[in-house]
Length: 277
Image 1 (tube, helix red, strand yellow):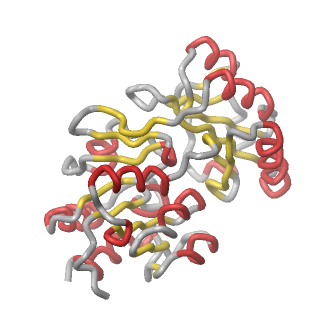
Image 2 (cartoon, rainbow, N blue to C red):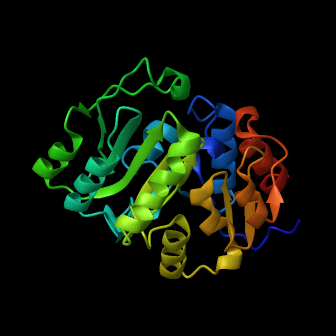
């Protein structure tokens, strides 16, 4: 495969660059650094916040831009500014939390502040043990999450909901969002969860804004991901790549699928075979 025209590599984090425990392996970090050393720009495109993403999560500081919160924020590290910002108004987010909060839901959100702050509702840890998969989160939990957001008055980059009875409750929740909040959209984040953002927010849109700013054509971009929030960028670049562990809808729009899943360092394997030979 001829990749000599690729100038930018956009890559998802969870389920792609990160292993099943949410870490970047040394092999992956070295592969990313080697790709950067060839002159290709690295752009993480993630649902996570931009704050400390390079230093604490990736361990690579040679990154100038990050697509954060599923595309709600495009952050320019060098300038210290947001090139794109499209957030859910805090009052709308608070009302949405009130509409979704139940004993069998766990709600979390990412604020659009300088530190990508996360907050969640207090939930039954034992009840959710079977869907936590080791990702127990006990920080910044609020008994009245909606009230906290109204009090803070800070707009929300994204909002997520984890369901115990996900097979039946996710379709209902997505229908509720579509009917009650036409300015928002929801999508499947994990098997048991959805995330919600502004309707016109997507990783693909943020990547387009960045490429226009940098003067890079879409066919000069490689994008790699595994979940529904990656479809918009994978479908509209020169080389769209789905992880072996990716959802069927991602594989359907990708030009290629990695040989290995993220849990077997499939992303590093793809980088080595494609860019580093």
